[in-house]
Image (tube, rainbow, N blue to C red):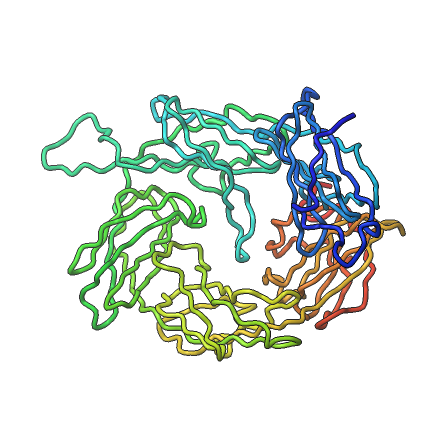
Length: 551
């Protein structure tokens, strides 16, 4: 059988030794080849994208496309370990050696001169959810956003996380594609101008309340906790997941923005609202702010939980205020949102460890950490030669810290805002914050190797390094690696500290933020204390099944 052979040693950056080494000393190259079929009708798939990756700390990729018979090949490969994945529009991506994203990918080991031409992929069609959106009268409703959301954990709070979305067309039809297997809450929302008045009679001089389509979770509720989850399997189409949106008169939500003492005018002032149950990612709403009393009112908020964010600028300084509000069917008229001034956050970055003098700290930046809207440029500062920096105009709120580039083999050692450990706790900036942010980076992280077994035999598995209980909420402390076919694993760039090691045949990574997810398996964890540099090797056994996997 002939294959479309690709010379990929240049693309992979795996050139065989040259120059001082004679060509005859180079190992014979190998080949990886195979074919891609449609799992439903067993027909070859043309123009599927096949990606070959080296198994290294910094993987390098090469890409090939299947021909008319679904065949692909990678040639001129040096001996080594590789991973292989296939993608094609309309199909679910596939990875060699596993049929689930919850399992470690397979590894193809190529010896000198070896040819692996027996690889076969059978791609499943993408999972789709389809349906129709209509209005109160059963007429098609175009321009409605329908999103598939999954329950998960974010900042230790259980909430709906965003997923695929689609708009309904002129006939009210929508089609969600590329949905991974799982259970989803479907939500339909429509924004825009208010609808025409629905009452059949109008009285002169009587104000007309605006009508808007209420956000709706399938099958007909405005509360996420009451939504019926739609369970989907790979390669199937789920039809007739329909919505009938209700036009409702909306209450008036109004109040005042309270400026700081001494401020009577702003160059810019605004207020916005977003659904709290959508994590600030749903439709946003704006309202006018009227001077001189800075009054505002919303008339388009349907029932639900909202976060209101007021922002302003005056004299080159930013101001911000946040208020949570529960909107029902009655007017709200007494809201008061106090603006607080931004601060200039000073700090320093120190690099420690072997070779520290060779590394210059990268810019330090801040990222909003509370899921609410933020207008303006990202707070950011260049680090001076002496390691100091100053981030100007940081508004009050919860902020995550991006310390910049970490040296290869290094780790983020500490971050402190005054006396507070903001590496393991939220950094809350207020108008009176006047302490420095001190960041320490080390060039030498902890490294750990080990072996995974099942019933005394080497086993492939996903190895999870979990920090001690008091730091379970610190995601940067977790490490996940796949053991190779011989059960060997390597963990690098870990922060020194006390951990537990687990090996799972499969588990759902999205559950890491769930404070309960490891409780059934705590006794099976192997305790380890990591120090900078290499640590004693560990032996662990596979736990089957893992968290989030059906028994």
